[in-house]
Image (cartoon, rainbow, N blue to C red; front, side):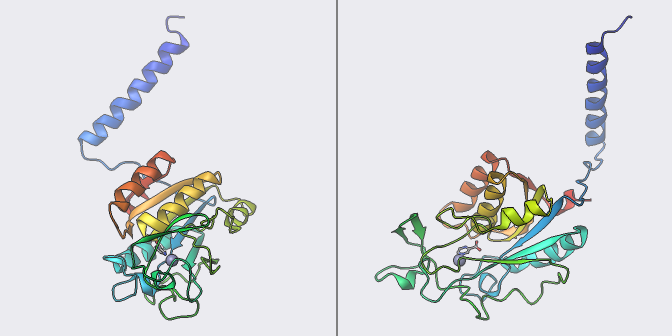
Length: 239
Ligand code: VGL
Ligand code: ZN
């Protein structure tokens, strides 16, 4: 025996490293992520009120629709979320006298950002964007439907009460959750972090999402997602 197992392992590792380096140096593509039966795409809140002209328009929010329609074709399984508030919802500035949108107030579960009225149950603004083309979506989960409780996340309401989505996904055997949609720094970020908390791998697809970016919220959200172990990719990384 002239080589120990360790030497062989180290030599193999070096070989892989130099091959990867050569591929990068030659401008070759990174290996793509393979999508399988344990993966699901969650299309977050692509609703009229979050699009240009809507009451809580996300800048360039309409630009997510093309990438999301294309992504949906690569996944065997897709679900969607819908922000679904009552009239006079606790997250609306108009519900609190003297408050303006983007100010905050203290609610029983903590500090709540106050928004323009948006995504009122049954309204045109709450409807999914007409240009979404995902007939195969298997579930639409609505959230934020309690008058006194917001829910950015599709997994947990603002008071951390579960929505049931983790149970649904686990019972179906999903292990990795991909999130895209609106807004990157609120409902996408909270959904991805709570997916991690519920034991799923979580990936946010940046080019298929757009942020509100209220007072640095977009950078803060990416920081928090990174700490929670959420992966950040672009659509091109998916096979
Ligand atoms: C959202 C603010 C309020 C979102 C929903 O979908 O990101 N943001 N409600
Ligand atoms: Zn909302």
